[in-house]
Image (cartoon, rainbow, N blue to C red; front, top):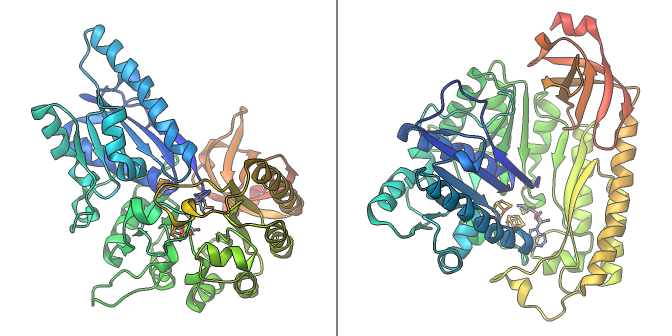
Length: 470
Ligand code: SAH
Ligand code: SF4
Ligand code: F3S
């Protein structure tokens, strides 16, 4: 999963909003989506985006609990925000409302109350539709207002209809279709922070996708903690698979590209594999986390599949879509991981070949089964294994990027590049691509002849005839 640390800002508006809102987002793509939805919910109260916390009447820290370091960052950031607030008050400005949202709020709400009692609002990922009511309660009562329920109502039913999509220049957007997890992997906090698995109804997803496309979006990434466990109901009350949903979405005129993340190997059904063969809009790039290549460790992790079953899924996917490239997540140093287990992971990486990957040292999380296991792996062993694994993954990523030099790729132009006259876009494999071309082409999908690979991007030459024909 693509972990991100970014501040959500919108294009600067001509007039300053009545109330400045600054949202700081950490964690996964779903948090990026949630941050945009929280901004939507607050818009009717007069809140609009401002670029800096110093200018904000309200600051939301949307947090991640996945690893220890992510959680500790929250408390250090809160200390900084408190200082900013004090300086604002001393300067005669309004007292900033500080809110902590997301997975740390859910998992460690009480800890926030005791370690940072100056925080005004603490809200979990399932209650952000109640933000306006919470803001009003905080203003009335003072003290910290906390809401970390798993409410019976679905927050999606309460979000404003005209939600502005979380976009990158209005051309790419995230859309949450499934949330929560019932799989309880030994190491993971997500089932505790996001709650039980649930899927949005098909009509609600299609309506939001249409709104996004009408506002200019060309590429949508469907999000879920286990997005391919999607089973939303259609208008006849029938459970729908991700493959069926993708077929419906691909019919929306103007929606050129569909992606989904994060999927679980256990839920890769044949219908989804067939969808990769049959739906051209479904991009040939799949993030399918495996975590380990050792059957012993996969069992200890409660992943529910073996390394060979993973290899077999990849084989079937590649049969269906030969140009499919893969990305994955890996954890080294799960309790009990032996040197042989680690070598099995290295072998799986060699066997599959990944275009990119995220890899982490195992981080014990309070309340998860693995945290209490006796055979914890020493930190220096984890460090060494991570370095070895990342060197191999880097080699594979470089080789994949190199293999594209000399090919022609469809590139969605998302904006201007850094140099004058340059455009920036993304390939089907999510690589940034830079090339010279006129700004009028922004928003189009053009053919680019790839001429060079850089560390994390590609360079190329626009094939003009095709661009003009678009
Ligand atoms: N639902 C996804 C993963 C969500 S969490 C899946 O099943 O694959 C994103 C990634 O963070 C995981 O894939 C895992 O590699 C990593 N991660 C989760 N918990 C972790 C922990 N305790 N220590 C280290 N990495 C962890
Ligand atoms: Fe976490 Fe496992 Fe659920 Fe993924 S499938 S969110 S790793 S518990
Ligand atoms: Fe982090 Fe929560 Fe996402 S723990 S990875 S923000 S689901």
